[in-house]
Image (cartoon, rainbow, N blue to C red; front, side, top):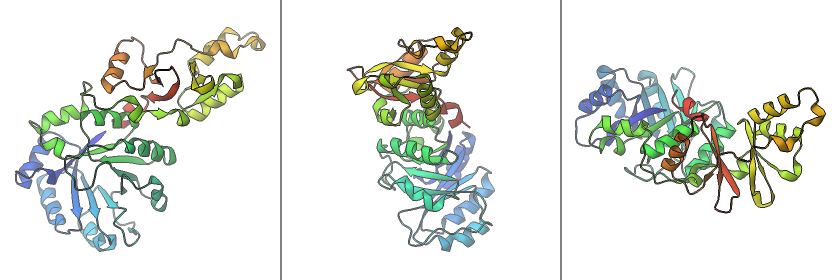
Length: 334
């Protein structure tokens, strides 16, 4: 996941000093906030003389059309417009280069992106816009999942409340870029903050139920419906390589993975009529409580020598309430 440094969050130093410090620490992007103030393009011109880092421009304005000439004269790698402030539709000519995004605040449903499906990404504002040092609103985890399901080929950027722990969760969810401002500049150093945004030893404030894929969105099959075909269909629909198996009230029995299916097929390869779908269920699969912290989850994973790519999430009554999956971690680093 790329880190986009919010350059105006450092109020203590001249802009050039801030930029050169960020360059020295090899941040990925420079995030430039434009609150309907075209003078930021003078800063962009200056930045271009100091470094060649990509610029991530976030414009809040009722009238995007007034910025077209500025964007022509000062091309940026990423340009985002804030949805809630618009009084006209964003109409950008093809001559405007760079990736284009739509920013939405927490209460705004991601379905508004439908009007801008030609854009490249969505920017989820996870705190109150303009509130430096705000706390990440956990409701945005579900918005990220929803958008990823609706637009799997689009990128997701996040701005607001991103500390080390949130950064890990976002990487795990496949977010491609996160904006960091006060967290980046208020620590002992930029380097220290960047290390916290990418390390694995985390101070935990979130529990799994805050960001897991809930049971209603998970691949799951009820024991009474078990058949080889339904198991395969559930795995295929989930696109995660497994399905949970439950009884009434989602009482957890186990899971069936692609590997379990292969083993069962190999065992009965000479007589598939003897294939028993119940024998495919891994009833000793590793699970984790919904109240576990991110640190506890990582410690559990480290205990096992084999790679773990997903975990069933259970409540105290051993009912399945969701899953966590790690398939996006590598993708989120690209």
